[in-house]
Amino acid sequence: MSDSIIPDISCSTCRALCCRLEVQLIDDSDDQVPEEFTTLAEGTYTVMKQGLDGYCDALDRKTMLCTIYQRRPFICREYQEGDYDCMIEREKL
Ligand code: SF4
Ligand code: SF4
Image (cartoon, rainbow, N blue to C red; front, side):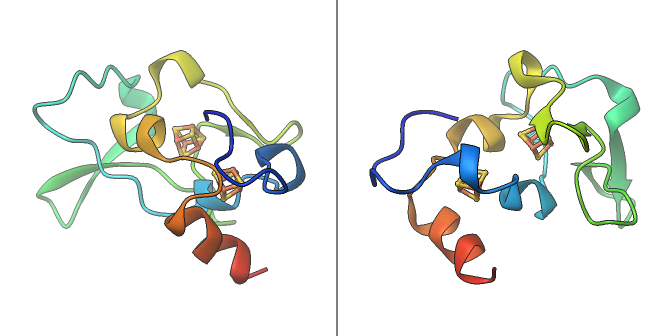
């Protein structure tokens, strides 16, 4: 993730809350996510697989870091710490 737009909000203190959201892969993006981490939702669109704990399968549960950071989906690359969606997830804490 990129630098936070709100100084006190940091991924390093959050334990990857946004990595429990459904992450859809976008057909015409340059996503190059390893197939083992993806699945078809409702038989129609591709998403990141999630474990029983709700977290994305590509998340290392010990470090809480993305194991495919350089190849993470477009949606993950666009998600910015401190923005509206991030704040909504943190509010749920
Ligand atoms: S919810 Fe926000 S602060 Fe937490 S990991 Fe995601 S982008 Fe970072
Ligand atoms: S691909 Fe990486 S950044 Fe995106 S939800 Fe999964 S673990 Fe998080």
